[in-house]
Length: 222
Image (tube, helix red, strand yellow):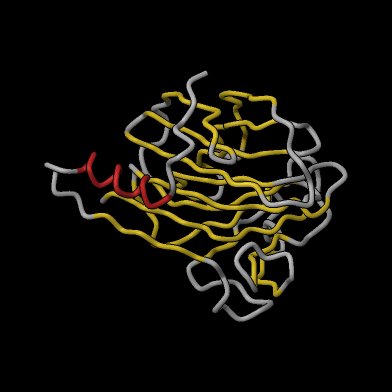
């Protein structure tokens, strides 16, 4: 499988994205959340928690002060450590609607017996329809899904050793139908899917997974 140039940094990726957009006079919007200025035990104002199939909130998402933060001193955590097999804990971010984008987040698998780890959402029209890539330390794999009407459809799987109790990074680059996914700066997926054309970004866990997220970044071409 082709590998992404590991020397590329976020800044280099942003430059490449702007170069690709040259000639079409696209206006890019870039946002970064490190959660350090947010009030602990609250949800950042742009973030909206989804609902589970029974109408309850899709998880307990809140800002936490912790020594484990990748960029001290706070993270966004999904801390509800219980849930059914298909309880998808989703939080979406308003103001990020778009099609072509470069997004990235770091995640820390804290706990989970039925499920563990977390994921990155893009092109979400709502909490039932979106693309998702997630990494699971229990299954030792990374997957990319199309979620339609709340039902996951597996697009690709990549077996990968995923350590617990440490930070990992997921990055997604979208251009039209083309999607590239990088895990810890290594490309693991490169595919084309035409189902969803635009939408918001978000974060995801499942079942009883407790996960911390930090340094969420998005660069959307308008």
